[in-house]
Every structure is written in structure tokens, then in C-alpha cells.
Image (cartoon, rainbow, N blue to C red; front, side, top):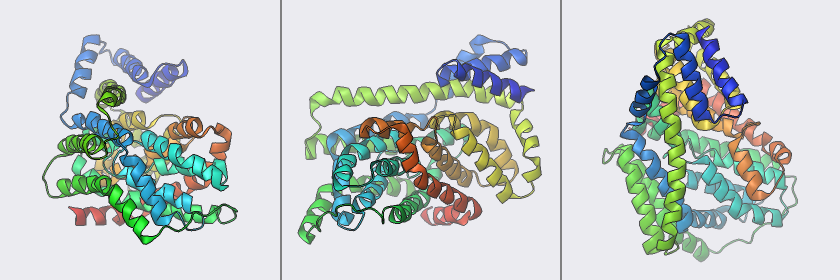
Length: 425
């Protein structure tokens, strides 16, 4: 009954158009009333406590780093490097999009920002080269969802704080799965694009490739700084976010000189707006998580999953299917905030590694960004590329299927995540 009240009140609030954060607060009030714990001042206190976390400071700094990279020319140089490396092969612009998506993911951590950057730079070129526009737009969207999986990732930070799991371990464990996602997209693109009669870019000379690499070198250094610093314990994820923000601002303003002092207010305001939205969601969800624990909703969900509790792989498959379904209706961060406090007690009871679960959970939530009707990155591609939603949905389907195959493979073969994690540690 408690699970029904929570779900029904949340869905009802969303159905009337209430923003997710306020819908979470409404469902929390409904739970308080049901449990006879109706104390509005307790909600305010819990919201303050939920947002009062040193680890969450990484979010605004990573957001600022991503905005500074886009405004300062780092993102554009990475796309140009991808063109220099693989732009000349058949279907090369698609491979450029995938390579650039991996590069950008290692800098930003925001699927929406990366998708917008990719689509803005590459869609006009792919349209001019004769590529199928909906399929190209679908590839941009699918490449954008690599960002929450490869560190630095806002999703890992939110999950780590909510689940009380090491954010550093999550960052290190996400490297290989993110690269596997890129390889899956490359294989899928090779299959679907071979029937296209598109133009091929001219082969760049070794000198031109070296110049592109030299031009993008400062952007490529940043992921190495973050991963190396985390691996060797030089700084925490929050400190890594500060390093990334300062580095991106310095390179954009002093080295490339594309980020002007007059642009700083716009860059910071954009980062502040996004960070404020995420932090308010975290604060509202902390009340729900508190009441979910008191109401023992994880126990009710455990009873539903009881038939799968004896076998870890079966349990993971059941949970991943649940998250896929929820991801079609909820956005990325709300899915993490709502399901994490429900699922983590079950995961720990079953003896599943929390870091392994966290990587697959974030990957699954990222896939939700591709699934209609919500599909945040689909909306971004539609706006940037000026393509209808129905066409983008048709174009993204092969790439969505490939990412679901990656999720299934990682679920059936945990060593693909845990093996590289042990080495990186």
C-alpha cells in the first residue's frame, strides 16, 4: 500500500504538469500523511541536509568546466581532431561523431551539452555530404549518452552521494564501459551506413593531422589529469572538478583566447542555472529517500523481486528491465534520485558490488535519454538539427538497440566492469 501511495502521488503530480522536484515533494507529503508523520518543517530540514554535501560541490564546477570548454573552443578542436583521424574513411563523418563524443564525454559529463555540441558542428556537414539526416541525428543523440558513463559524470556524483558509494571508484569503473559504448556505435554505424552513397572527406596529410593533434592537445590533457589524479589519490572528485573548471577557463581565455572576459557572465549563468536545477532535485529527493526508508518501500520492492534474489545475474536483469521501463517516463537525474534509495538495499543484500551496479545503473539511466516520450537528448537533436521528432526516433533505433546490447553484455559479464576497475585502482 505504501509503495502504491508513493508511486500514485508522484505520477499524479507529474500528470498535472508539476516539475519533477515539486512532484517529489508532493509525494513526500503524501507519504508523511499516510505514515502519520506530517511535519512540513521536517521536510525543509531534510532538504537542507540532503543538499549539504561536499561531494555535491563537484556538480557546479563540472558544469562550469563543460560550459567553458564549449565557449573556449576546446570542444570544437576535439571534433576537428576526429575529422583529421577518421574523416576520410567511408562513412567517416559518423566515426568522427563517435570519436568526438568519446572525447567530449571525457571532458563534460553532460549528455545534453555534448549532444548539442556534436549536432551543432557535425549535422550541417553530414547533411551536405549526403548522409541520411534522421539516422545522422540518431547517431548524434546516441553518442551524447556516452557522457554520463565516461568520467567525469554528474550521474556518478549524484548516485555516489545518494547510495553512499565511492565516487572515485565509480569514475574509474566507468572508463571501459564508456569506450565499449563507442565501439558498439561504430559497429552499428558501419552496418547501417554502408548502403549510403555519401561523399567522403579528402585524406588529410600527416602534417595536417599532426597540426590537428597539436591544436587539440590541451583539451586531451584534461581527462588524463582527472583520471590520473583520482587513480594516484592526488585529489578527490570535488577537487578534480575545480581543477577541470580552472583549467578550461585558463585554456579558453589565455591560450586559445576564444573565451573573452565579456563571455564569462553568460558562461557562469548557464552553469549556475543547470547546477541549481540539479541541486534542487537532489534536495527534494532527499526527503523522498528519507521517507522511503522509514516506510520500508525497499522491503516491498524486495518482495516483488523475491523470485530473483537467489541468483545475482537474474536479479540484475530484472532490475535493469525495471530501470529501462522507468527511464522511458522519467529524465536522467530524477530516475537516479528516485530509484537509488529503493534499489540499493536490495543490491547490498544480494551481495552485488555497489560500484558495478552503479555503473550499469547510470548506463541504463543514460539509455533512458534516448527513449521516447521523454528522451531529453532527442529533443536537443531535434532543436539543433531542425528535424522532426518522429524522424529522429526512427533514426536512433539501431543505435538504441546497440546500447541495450552493451547493457545486456555488461550485466551478463560483470568482469568487463570489475576487471578494469581493479587494474585502474
